[in-house]
Picture (spheres, helix red, strand yellow):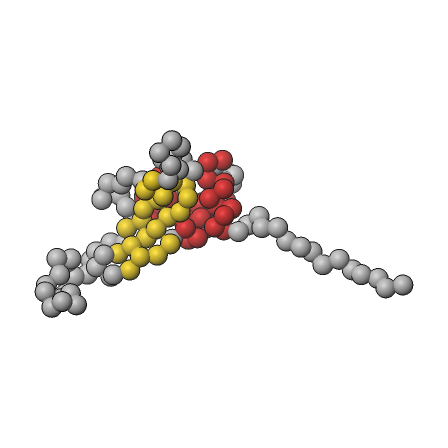
Length: 120
């Protein structure tokens, strides 16, 4: 793989896994990106870390792939997976994940129901 400048890339071709990183708010220092071990940055690891309370007040999850040259917000798919797993286990979303899941899944959005109108 060559860069746009014509020099060889230091990123290996193919086989590079997608990396998921969680932004969370642990309190005093404010929002931070969770420190991760490069061996445990996959989707499954992040979902399990969230379910076991490794992150306080998760804000969002970002996925990227250096070899692929892309980065995106993966919060919606992570929130969906958290809800799915909790539903399969017949349990509620853990309290520390409730705001995150509600924000990205949109399950509890306010809905305005149409009211019948009568003209007399």
